[in-house]
Image 1: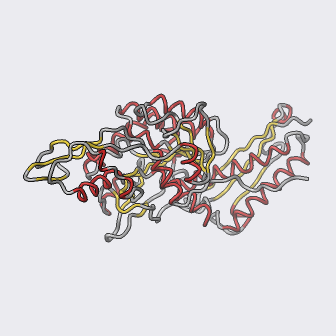
Image 2: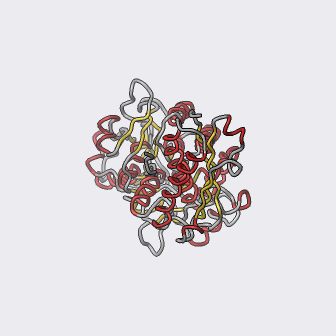
Image 3: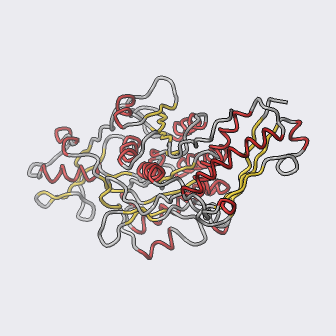
Length: 435
């Protein structure tokens, strides 16, 4: 008796980065709550600051006519914050690959090694590397982002959620600074152009409310001048700590959208929690620059009419000029990954059966039933079964006589998703041991 296709989980990111406690052996650890993460990997990195002289043009506060800046003197890491935002936005299950502890700065090779571990892990559907934006050398960021995109395209079972390089550098928190970050990003990922429909980028960084007064150690602040207002300085330190890249929140929004509607729904028009504002104020005029009709898009998080920040857009990096509209939308790529992976996993039950018409018909019937369920849930452009999808599996249609001799059962699935309303064709191959 054949088992029906249940559908694989759709929103299980693998987070790669640095943790307070680094396991002795590398590996991907599956978690379902923030408390699980803290129990296994520890909490946030210590944030130590020193008060240094500033200028009238570059300062955080003034005392008696003198200007001062708060300068971070400890290393920065992003993974903990990304995990917090993932769960805050409805994330449930995730994998974490720790590439080291907080004693050493972020390094390209560490993150590449973590990506290799993720690539050998079954189950992730998104790849998030929050610490990549901290790599100082532009070439280092590019190497990690390109590897991230290449892995997603090669495995065809996951997508990359990307932050822009130097996203947490205040220099980039202006319209001109963000434009420069976008240009640097597009140049860095250009070598992975063939994998652009497997990745989506988001900007700018977000002001959030993850840390509170109890997380600030004023006693450890170096060089605080006499006469300074401790309350003011604590508030300034909180503002500096409570800045996050968007990737963790976006992964959580994808999970929440999938649970409440379906993977075919765009993860957009949603307020990322607990964000209070984007670090760069952008308007309607910026949309055509960051999300052009033809060209690679960077999805924006912006406010409208002074309301809460909202995710605008769910575009992949794919340019309409490069590949048409078919894979320009993140929900399209993620839905196709879901359909293909779910059917491929279910076809494993036929591995020992004969590669014959009886098996082909049974396999096609399973896929047809699975797609019928999705159609009734609203995944496709049409609610009419015959117009929404088609499944083919058989000699002369999807297989040659040589394919059968070589032990290959090949199925073709055609679906028309809601957007952009074009036919997408999936080829699913199962190695057969039966005769």
